[in-house]
Length: 213
Image (cartoon, rainbow, N blue to C red; front, side):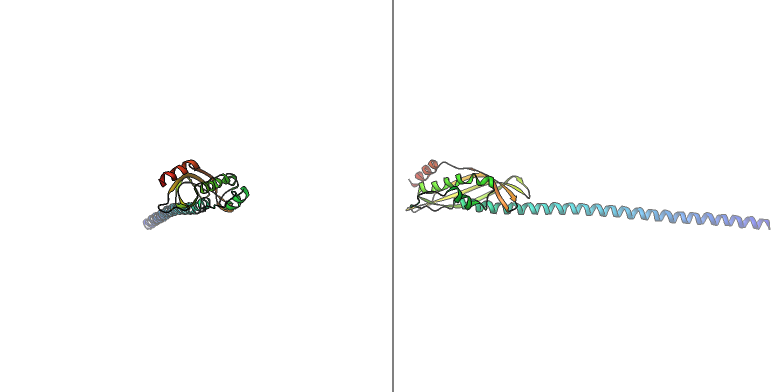
């Protein structure tokens, strides 16, 4: 009877040990599964964050490209407003500062507005003294060092065509280079600074004279 009792105790203890190992193995298995799930979630999160950063960068690039396009549109209109001028033989005076400011106010900031009348006066004198209708034959822009969603610098190259009154044949052109600083304001894109590299009127007249020879 005693031997049977001991045997029962031993069997019971063996059972306890087996059950303990089973639950331990199950616990380890569950733990490993949880760790694996966590690692997968971390990898998915890292991938989503990377994709989100790439999407933000793409959106920023698109916004910047759109900003450049809008800035160039305003710059083009501004230069065409300046250089598309008809010769008037009966003209007795040039436009006043106030008239010029009204003409270009949609395209420039207040800082540039104070400087623009000098350019307009130069172009008007160019037309009158060469007896020519002026027009923009071609204009190209290259983005400079600054290119953001709110500020763009542009290098420009303009071919200005002279249609001389009373003369036929090939129409001469002169080239105007310069830089524009464009900024985005509450009223849209504006020219904040224009740095033209213009020839003097006498130089232009001399070039036209040589062209006519």
